[in-house]
Length: 169
Image (cartoon, rainbow, N blue to C red; front, side):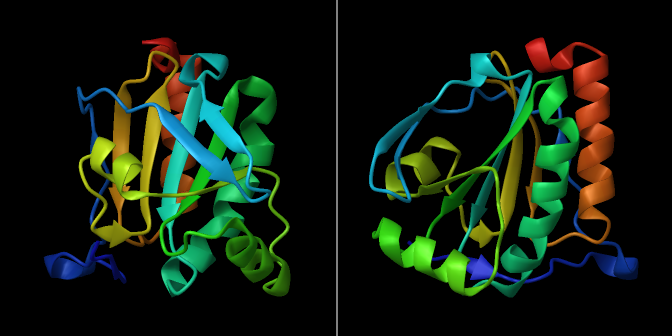
């Protein structure tokens, strides 16, 4: 699997915008957590689920993680949750050690990715890649690469989907 990292910039200096309104169904996520225990993510258990694909070697990914943590805490009581999927190591302990050594204090679920989950989301070729998934498992937006204003943009999407009921679509 080839993964690229970096900031995607469009002409005029704008970062690549999220894609909205995708009609694709998100795949089931069955992966190991950082303790090596299997986890099944049930989209129906939350109003909206953020799924973030990242890698330990990816600087933009590391910069996004605290932003995702803020969103996870800010919207948790409204039915929002976040899930991180590390795509660069097959060992849960390696990822856990990286997060601890980096001082990341993350409350959201962190899982060990594999090719099957990447393929289920259409193939993850760029990290970070982030999806918002409704309670019915529909992908409602996708963010490719690092984006200027990522946290604010995703917060606006969360507000829209949770307030408008689209999280239950």
